[in-house]
Length: 241
Image (cartoon, rainbow, N blue to C red; front, side):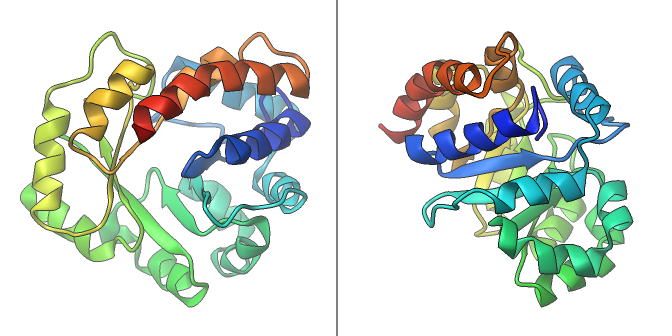
């Protein structure tokens, strides 16, 4: 949220809902996005320079109409959640239409307080796994997850790649062996071709950096929506056929 500005972010959320996406990743700007590549770092820095934080993100989302067929998933690092307060956050999320949270830098071994607060507030929890995740870690994630499991397609940070790591299919298979939770694949998804490949073995595909690149030169909400539509329409066709 907050790139290129909050008004454009709100317009983009509403446009994606109208397009029929299944879920929207609501990214919270953070000063040290260690899991993210150049594109998300750039957009995050831009949002922070405008004073966008978690509180302002939720205020902006409350001004939008949520769709029952489109989930909103908050993606954040832990520090912004702690600064807001875990209990107050889970009370605020439903009013913003958010039903699930993935805390990028929170591992299940250290997530007890967050898991408890989320459960009390009726918020689903999601966790990341990677090709290097051990069987023990996969089981911990399976036990802690009440939403979906985010499977990192390849090692490294977020961002568009020239090819998806073949390990993604194997990782998804390992996840499915320990949980019935939905499995989504992200990191490096470029467009329709990647979506068609990944949907063959996963329940969902996450696109972040490629969408941000698609709207990079837009300076008004209308321009953001126009560029996003042109990028997302073939992606959604690939996902739903």
